Amino acid sequence: MTRIDEASWTRSLRALFGEGMFAAVGARRHDDWRRDALDVMRLATAEPRGWPRQVSAPGGAPYAPGPNGPFGAVTPNDFTGVFPVSRRGAEQIVVTLQGEWFQTDEIPDFPAREAELMSHARGVLDRFGEDSLFFTNAVSARNDPHADMFRREGTYEGFTEHVMDCGVIALSATEVGVFWGFTID
Image 1: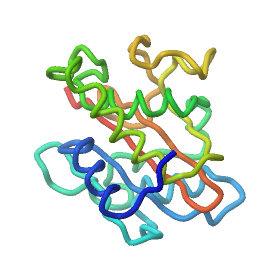
Image 2 (image 1 turned 120 degrees about the vertical axis):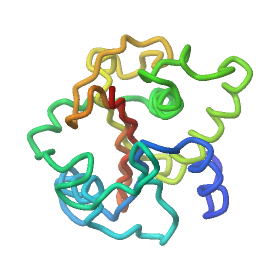
Image 3 (image 1 turned 45 degrees about the vertical axis):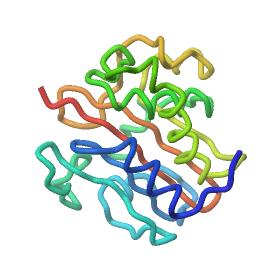
């Protein structure tokens, strides 16, 4: 695991998250991490390190905080639709967010770019430390948190009202990150 700093975080975030994507981090303040994840999803908490976040709606406009954002209708009960996933699986999912329908075959020139994209995903998730936990709404993780998420079924427990959404929630003892992609049509 490498040490992440603001410059490498920003570089990896920009390489992985663009228009119509969501990448934000907040502090862990509650015993129930789901409450902290909801605060991040609703953009109701500051970035604890002051580092950049990427929360761009389709068309490039920033996502609105609160109930008008992509996670506005999410409740704590919705977290029954997330499953533990290995660090490697979480990295793979973050990479697949680049492709339409969250599949590697939809990522332009994926075979040539796989190592670079995985390096960026590793950099983003290294922020959360060695003891971090990861969760996803990719159903393939339900029965096997160590499944190859590049070869997974395209089935997800939706968190939003978009046609499809997929992502990773990363937890450390002090921070929670939400990294998500959306298919709007």
